[in-house]
Length: 398
Ligand code: FES
Ligand SMILES: [Fe+2]
Image: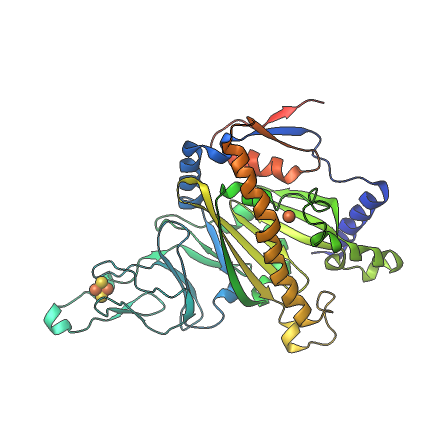
């Protein structure tokens, strides 16, 4: 990110602090609770957002070296992601071309051969069928026609993009708009994968997404956790096509008031939270990014799964000197913060979000209200609705 834009963001946050204001969507809107409970909408979303739409399945370091792999089960089909011997990223349907069982059952690891557990047909990380046991008994198998079925896959801006439909095309730049250049600047490919936490919750997937969309709740729900480090209800907000960027205000912004602007660094003052349509939150934390992917449980509007993966700035292990403005922290402290963040999501955000799902099915009210200080919620839901051909949310005049 250009330094001038960093200064602009920091000044905007300081201005909100000084004036006691926050970002303003200009109006309140009403979101019908059927958006969270309707079977019909859930089915449309599953098809349109999760079957017919490109997905981010990880960052580059989910596949740290040649022959690394991971599997995914979140899109209603078994997917195998690999890095081949030359380092090229691939995604396949994780289905054996013999009798169709699942080839790789481990969640992640490193293999130069994927051997099917049923009869042992074996595939290279590039997808080719390379061995058929007892072929003299089985009969000849045309290798060319029996590779793993490839899905459109691209490694762009340090992210692993996959389209779950094999005949689709990936249009990452078109999807990201101006965010593409910004992601390029973050150099997301350099971070080291640290682990994955999975949460299953009885709530609509959009209620999980909504918890990331405002800091209005920090002073109450997170008063003993995140509110220690953040000024709640103070943020910036920018949209990029169907995606967005929020800058959350860190209390460490205060130290910048005494520093020359040339020394300002946005990560000292703010936590960037990017939303990538339809289901990804990318948070650029002090020690490295956190990637949150939220999935509905297929067409079920009442269950969802969050996959939260953590990545660490390599400067911590390499002891780069001078350290970048973001790595002047103790590594153990950073790891603890990452774990603590996942626990805050589980123990605070997702507890109230699952309770809000119960509220939605209770019939207590027909809609929930998104305030002027919650522009991301306006944008998420208007975007979903527009993508499904529904009218925008009702604006409340006041
Ligand atoms: S089903 Fe895979 S080898 Fe037979
Ligand atoms: Fe929260």
